[in-house]
Length: 145
Image (cartoon, helix red, strand yellow):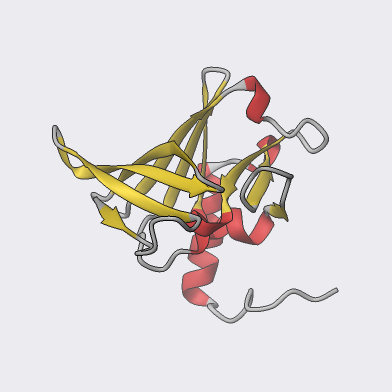
């Protein structure tokens, strides 16, 4: 087990190795004493977090899916891509795109999450955004209201 937070009774994120796949880890979240597996992290290449979402995971008001903020912001967990499978369809984007265009929310009994509308998921849009970040890293450094 790779612990991201060494205090076992606090809310934390941790990874466990998948023996049959050396570059893969299960991603776990402990929140208010409840431990749940939230996805699968493939550390090969640029890294990919993937997870299957059910109908009850869709935030209907914005037609969006969420990923825990602690996972997206954690510096020691390296991955570039996010693939969420919902209703049999794979929704792909990048971690940076998710953080930039997603909306942070906190619902009671749940951890802080970032929600991205289904219509914003697009590998090609995320790749263009990533290219802009590489060529103009300070362009997206802060939001203007």
